[in-house]
Length: 272
Ligand code: NDP
Image (cartoon, rainbow, N blue to C red; front, side, top):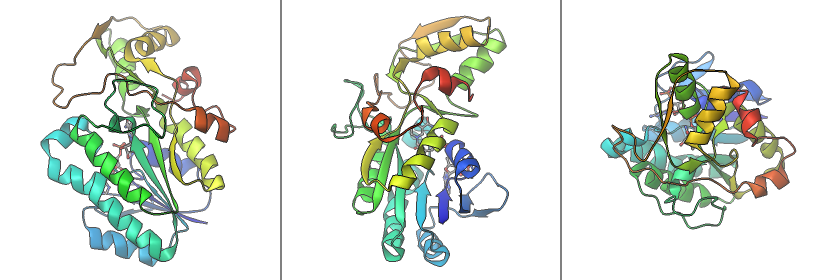
């Protein structure tokens, strides 16, 4: 089984590369990885050619501009990487009849309701969310595709890592009041490894348990016995883009489909 991973140098891509079995074709852009292929996804014709030449059975697109504030400031590149390239991936996937998995985000929602189900209506409030939603739409225009919506991925970056490092230095953590459904890149990769076998299509939420950043920070403080202060804040200084208040995802569909515990906060915090 040939599996092509776009974004193999990212948090999720690195974990998928460890876990997935088969002949892996790993693509990076600026952060070189061993045995990887360098390919800039904004070069659409090269992306299509690459897929047609490599003929993977499965394509997983984890690549994105994930810096929400950068997306707000650099709309052109955000649109190309998060939206437009998906159209070209799908075009090539159709020709070679590859199964396609697109990784999406809780930020397609406005955050007014929380615990969003797969069929809830997206309403992004920042450019990152909008570009990712367009990416979903391109992905879903192809019958043999699965859009996985997830939330707060962490591995070498993400809120839990910031909390751990800041408390370790005995400094103050600013914890945004809002809620989300954080998941470690490792558990998400394990869940994807299982879901691939069922070749599901449509949309599925795969994320962790709903938590506020404040509760999460307290948990990390306790788990690692750290000093330092945690302050709950309405807004984080320096944020440019708006953030949804409660972007948590309803994961009941994935819980029914998957045999592994991908969601427990305690389990996820073992993979920081
Ligand atoms: P990372 O930010 O860790 O990695 C992003 C990846 O995209 C890197 O491999 C990067 O390559 C690649 N990439 C960016 N621009 C280009 C480009 N022009 N050409 C080729 N590759 C490019 O992302 P995560 O692993 O954290 O996220 C994975 C997916 O999950 C993304 O689709 C994201 O939208 C989604 N998601 C992420 C969340 C999070 O909290 N991080 C939450 C919800 C969803 P390189 O580094 O080599 O340049």
